[in-house]
Amino acid sequence: MTIAVLLAPLFASGQVKIHWPAGSILSPVQLQMLGEDNFFFEEEIDDDTFGRIDGLSFGRGCTTAREDLRLLHLLHRNFSGQAQTGEMICNKAVASDLLAIFRELYAADYPIEKIFLVDEFGADDLRSMAANNTSCFNFRTKPGMKQLSLHARGLAVDINPLYNPYVRGFVIKPAEGAKYANRTRNCPYYIKSGDVCHKAFTRRGWSWGGAWRSSQDYQHFEKAK
Image (cartoon, rainbow, N blue to C red; front, side, top):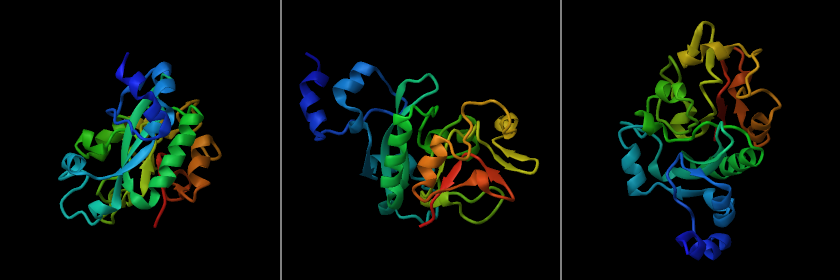
């Protein structure tokens, strides 16, 4: 008898939270046995997690307190339709929002390629975007500006950024996503007004960068607190 079978009653009762590495693929049998709900939860930033982000996304002079951040454990559907684990650090003020949003996207089979901490990419936003990584917290400024981004407070999320780039005139980030700046293309990974991703965020009071006037940040949702 496997450990999972022995622990199944505890999983079903919600007494056990499942800590699998981000990017793990789960089979339908595993999901049924372990319970999808047990893969959606938040935790405070413990010493192990802080060690992963200190000096990276939690950079020098970070003005967001460690105590104000939460680590989210999530499930999502990858581009092959498989259930895949993810993790994201956000502000505690929006943790419940984001858990509800990603539950909704998962239930709708909304495709998200990967959800890793931006620290897996050296906290380099361009590398993370080019890898199409969905992420939230990163203590950094807005593109080309000195003003802090809401990502610096864990109050902004970028979804499938390669296919939903930031566009300001001839500036496109990531550069690898340039061909996806044309929003008339037939692409299943575009975020568009009124789609399931857009509604999941905006219904909870988040704003979408794709609706901005001077620039369009199609990947970006934010909620100022």
